[in-house]
Length: 399
Image (cartoon, rainbow, N blue to C red; front, top):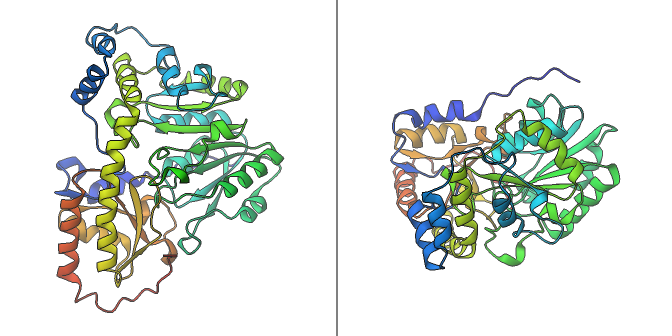
């Protein structure tokens, strides 16, 4: 296998631009999660449904080690999100989804060839490289709605291809593939004996529930669903993520790799996760209401400034990928916005090869602070609109 070359984290550059180490910026369009929870909210919701026992346990729980891969009660709550093929024994808990992505790559991609798609979340794409495996990155394009072309997947497959990483709903654009495309990709994987890891951190935040895809853990016997509490539920500080899968032989490989990382989460985090999942319907309803209201504001912004911005309108999650058609790269625009106290994520956060076709920036709209941030962005645009009156970059996105 080729020697491992570690990728420089995008955050190293971005945190300097956004002054993350010294208080950050006044307005953030960078955050990718739903409205953050508070512990008080979890307690209130637990007591309202008569679940005083979980609140009492949180106040008086042992600080002993939890079991490697998560306690049974949490894994049972997680399994309830899936179909009958997924029970507590089919769930492996981690201290966040990023650790889960790394562990899966070290367990399954270290000695084979992996296929992933770009632009995308860096850890999702690059974990196989960090594990020592070989990686083919298939680029996606706005012109095709950020959709995967199955023909390109087939062309990328080699005799040693054993791992494929999907991300649906798609980060950074918030788009969704069709059920037919998901089934075709699964069929290709089945034909070639490929494990699919599906980064599903925005699943359950579809703007229309009818667009929701089956979880890969339910759909495919070699499929793995990767999830975190931070995105749909806003449980960022709980730091709980998981992998769900049917094949227990694959799970054992994950368990073996997890042993050398962070094997057990804190019991406090587990109990907060249980509180969150038991109130899941209520929390998701609240967060989707915020997301839909904010998306309506983004629609107005995009219509008002259609001469300067374009997008593939998102269908899920709390993120959108927007192209600036004016005379600046997304990196230059991001630097100017940061100087004005506004944060967003330029294209370099999602790909190490920035071209005109993917020179976009990502905004997050899952929080109740979005209206103020968007108003600040609109004010910035108004102040520069005359100077940008003759955009120099041709339109490319599928509207």
